[in-house]
Image (cartoon, rainbow, N blue to C red; front, side, top):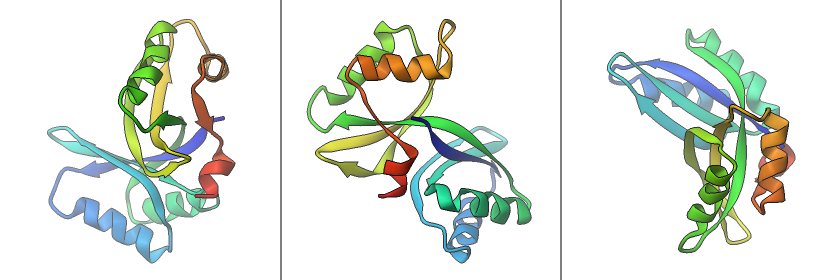
Length: 149
């Protein structure tokens, strides 16, 4: 139930993000989701693309000198109404999961906003985290569903 995310380390200087988006544009890769976080010295762009484009995106970025890697995240369908996100975060909290980071996705489906979640647990492996969320009513999208957006 995991989807692929690409993390790209960016030098914290003017124009770096634009360079990254230009590389992906030139390669014909559509970004479905994007989050940018920064520190004093560098930033991290987290990008979601369709699975068929993930290797080409990594190749284009590393070929241009960026450090880029794939990792796995969850894409949760969050009811797009008051308390919708709170209901998902309640499950995360009740199951003693930790949010490393999260960001919203550029799409919505069936009245649900989409959120990307990177979760960890001291007591559960990734597959158990997925099972626990689903058992507690959190709808997770598969890579195939994200590819179809």
